[in-house]
Image 1 (cartoon, one colour):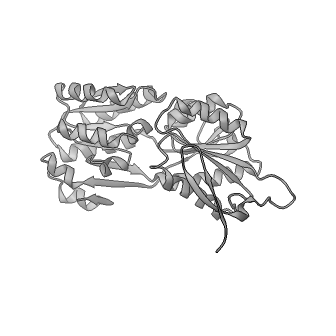
Image 2: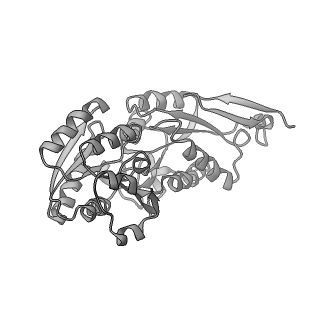
Length: 329
């Protein structure tokens, strides 16, 4: 049996690596260090970490031999991202991979000269960290996921389960720097579909109880949740409150239907994380982040929780069910 060593990372994640992983690359040079910084929880993002390793492996990297990866998890606490970024930079990382508008902004502010690869964010041009998708021009590149067409699509899904609905609510993390952009896009989407939109921004999960009461008093007939680590880390709480108040939900987070939410029209986050490995490869080989075009997500899936639909007294039409990539029963 081959001997193995066990390494415990920040956040408690334990990885088993072959003892040979201590080997140095040819020439005696230390392998480059990459930071994999996740704003969400370690438990929920183990598949993402594995996808990143898989992407690097396909490009010829062997963790511990010709590359080192430092994993850090903010556990849904946005305020930790800056400190974790500073710590990674102190460890000598050459590039940091992270996702989410809040995390990317915080990481860049903490380390403005360190290349950052986005595994998914709002419109980077609207956020101000890219001059254009084709040529970002700064220290941030990678993947983008947010567009007005997605908000329209998600809102339309709620309309399909509640065709007569005219009042909807939108839930955002108040700490997200992309909120001005999101709110503008949300209102445009509501205008396109001829409905009213009430926007709710919360700073912490404890505020959700009051927010849902307010939604109910305003007659909200559906809730669109702007994806954020704060919400994905508390998907069960949000789903329970939505069910209690009889408000169907839709999000870009596939974890919400799994936790009891009604719908998700979600981007393939695992595919984006795996794709981010190619950006890391190019940066490590000397290319400048500002010269690497930002890609937009192209893979999405529709998830429907039929058990939740029944609890809400809703009938999902066969035409919508036939389009679902995943049905939870």
